[in-house]
Image 1 (cartoon, rainbow, N blue to C red):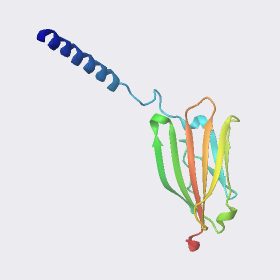
Image 2 (cartoon, one colour):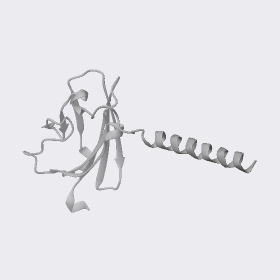
Image 3 (cartoon, helix red, strand yellow):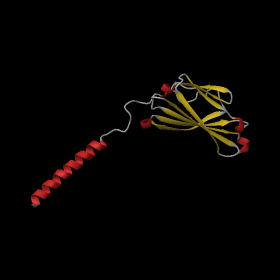
Image 4 (cartoon, one colour):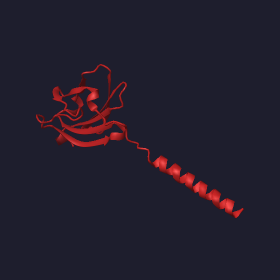
Length: 148
């Protein structure tokens, strides 16, 4: 009887080990790398200035724009999502504007405007495309330095 119990415990230990091995061997990353060019973003217009998008399909090409700076970036490769934060100097945060241009008509853009203070206006722009996992979120913080 004691021997049967010991054998049963051995089989149970082997079963649990095999289950743990197979559950740990699963890779949570997606099969393919994210390709943000599938969203087709060609440029963003901020306060009437058209800013091109770099070849990665995500970052703004800020080489000609001294009043805009990247302040942070979060990349979640397993979710095919990236978030980029920008700070934008402007004389009137209330009159700030932003618009995304994409070469695809099925790209969805949602824009939420948040007043974080009287001198800082933050816009959160989320971009997705039907049938694709890739998504981008831009956080644009418009502010006038003398008001902070």
